Image: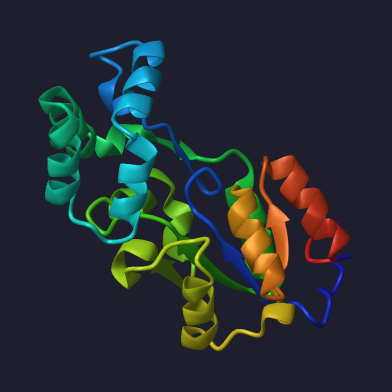
Length: 207
């Protein structure tokens, strides 16, 4: 018999990248360099800072120009990364679609909150179709705000009329989980579907 979910939890908010859909930024450039070379490029070009700017709504052409200020090669590699972005997505994260299905059957509201550029977000549900089954997704690039900024969490609460104490938030980033926890969400750090299932079972949200 299915357990009735805890009366205080009505909503589950999923991060997407490396929670619902796998992401490996090396893959779009894997035919040009080894992973070790990509790691060096990521450091030299400050890839993850540039990626965070894109997630916050900065257009790709501006990101490429920023990279090219350090090196024309960096600019070219960033352009290739964006042109081949779909290759960075590795498909559904194993086991998470099944968990989302069970939560949906339990009549929980399912939402998304993701740091993602508007220019590549259309690839997400193509790679992991369960994403399209979420009621709604707040995409940082559309909002001009990104996690872990508390402002995007406040916007999520307001837009979807959430009560943090009644909302479970799932993310693979420790910083994002910490912010959610500080704002009153039941926050779960995602490592894999086995651990997520155990955490949700402890909350009586799954069988």
